[in-house]
Image 1 (cartoon, rainbow, N blue to C red):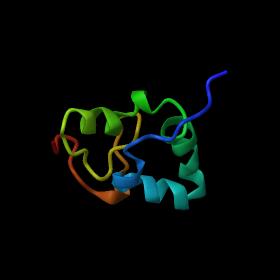
Image 2 (spheres, rainbow, N blue to C red):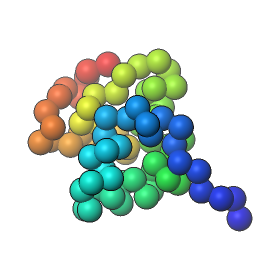
Image 3 (cartoon, rainbow, N blue to C red):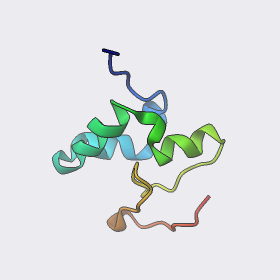
Image 4 (tube, one colour):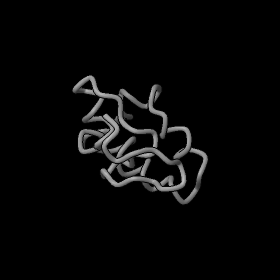
Length: 73
């Protein structure tokens, strides 16, 4: 079994700290940041040298209460 590896973008990810502090959002972190981060939409954008919106969740949906625009690229 392959050991889990944290996303290499975690240190600079605006959402990472929020996910770490909010218990209900920690599921996102477990499924993306500490698991298969290659499927994270935030990670995918950063590997294309694009800054993801602050409210972009790993699955590509937007977290409403943080504001931001879906087309912010």
